Image (cartoon, rainbow, N blue to C red; front, side, top):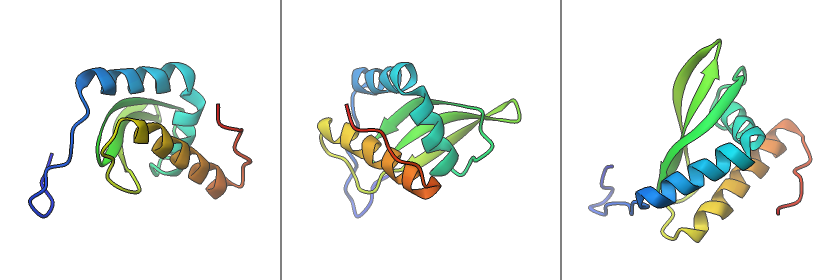
Length: 108
């Protein structure tokens, strides 16, 4: 983690990171792949899983040509509260849909 202008970004605890990663991988695997393909610059990806996150972005393991590669996607802004994670992931999903001309499904 790096400091920008002397401010160290907040880190979400390991239980939050594990919970978000598990939720994305178990309940939103297709959305995770869509986000990685579109926003992560891996249009040929066949699989993607969330591996971590911090205040500035989310980390994925993305499979392209049977090789798993790390991909980091920056958030639109620095997050400071746990509740902001869901809003940012929904924003990322909607942006990915928009770029592909897909209609996003309604938020749960």
